[in-house]
Structure formats: structure tokens, C-alpha cells
Length: 62
Image (tube, rainbow, N blue to C red; front, side):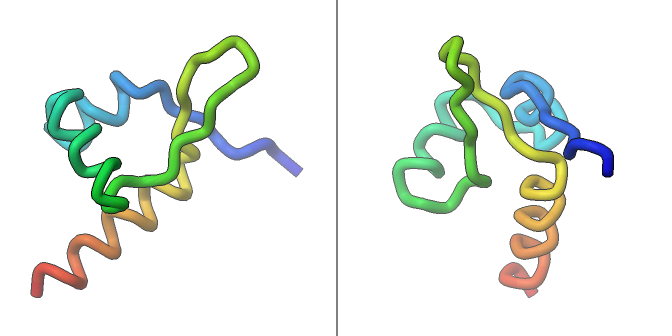
């Protein structure tokens, strides 16, 4: 079984068209996709988590 794709935070920000500051404000409110902190301190988002988050945003905006 293949490992899930892990995106770097700048990749996520570019895909959703959001600044880092806006993303962290959303995260503080519990509205951002789940972040994973690697042992080296870098942050990642699973592709599946981001895709699910986007779908959820679409359904709540309707």
C-alpha cells in the first residue's frame, strides 16, 4: 500500500490561495486542515486531509 502524499505548508497555501497569517488564524479557530509536525519540526498536510477539508468548505458555503 502506498503512503499518503504529504504536502508542505507552502504548497498547501499556494493551492488554497491563502497567506500564512490567514491560515494560522483559521487554524487557531479550529477551521484549518489538520497539520502533522514531523520530528524535524517541519509541517505537513496529508493530501487526503486537504481534499476532505476543501470538500467540507464547499458544502458549508452552500
